Image 1 (tube, helix red, strand yellow):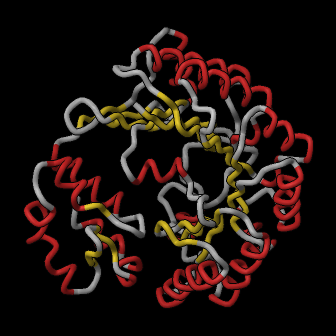
Image 2 (cartoon, one colour):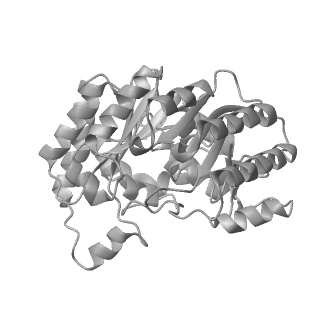
Amino acid sequence: MDISLYIHYPFCLRKCLYCAFNSVEEPPCSPEEYTEALLREMEIRARTMVHECTAVTLYFGGGTPSLLSPSLVGRIVEAAAAHFSLRADAEITLECNPGTVDRQRLGSYRAVGINRLSLGVQSFDDGMLRRLGRIHTSREAIDAFMLAREAGFTNLGIDLIHSLPGQTPAMWERELLRARDLSPEHISVYGLSVEEGTPFAVLEKKGELSLPGEDDYVRMFELSAEVLCSGGFEHYEISNFARPGFRSRHNTGYWKRIPCQGLGAGAHSFMPEPAYGVRYANPEKVEEYLEALENGDLPCSEQRTLSRQEAMAEKMFLGLRMIEGVNLHSFEAEFGLSFQEAYGAACADLFTAGLLETRDGFLRLSPRGLLLSNQVFFRFL
């Protein structure tokens, strides 16, 4: 069984003001101790797998995984090869904060097996970076990109956020052009979402967060495709653009419900058995995660076996994130009924409103549906 591996490193030098991911500024353990726990979990997970697995992708996310030393990253890559038969041509990605790397460190990551970097640039505007609470400058982001090229990386991604406080469509267009001019292989563009529990949520409740209006948000979303597609990028997922042949294989696995084993505090997993699949998660608190492994137990804070209805819903709202959409023949083969039988009546008005369309055997979001995707996804929940 082909599988994706995800490693969560939940530590940061400073937590960004908008961030709702599982991360902390003050680690309760050393990087070495956390790595040892990861390796123990990996060994136990591999031993308890029902089927033999071959890992086709390995992704280090966070947090700030570029705080992990190359030697520790190398140990994890070696363990993935030993326990999960990590394929020789596997896509091995490290999320990288530009403020945490230099030439030597990047070269060392390349040497231990990392072959793809996802650079958390977020903005090329220093004022915006300060507002977001980022630890790097625009110059440092560009330097990190250039140094990664010098280190031999031929698969580089850039993450950007639009609809930031005080941002206009013209400002966003300049961001896109700067990113495009660097000529990365992949660009992710996300609209800012103010999440509960973040400093931005507190500011918003106080009326101290001036966000762009709906019309500006829509225009920035549209500009992303206009600018990047005109520069040779393929728009393959709502928020993601890639040069031909450089789609994120790991993230594509999420949207296509490929088995994924998450490792680390707060990591989530999906396995296709039993029934229509099972989803489970590790405890978010690092202390609880470490304690379970010290006791020889698998860390697990929640587990849910999916019903057919839940699995069908996932197939739809995850698959519709892809621009190509959901293969209707594949849907019927997997669940034993057609899309029309499962959702025809419930989704009739979405076709009438021009949010959904079918083409060449695929159900997909229309251009207008991409703008209102959450309204479409809600219909399947």
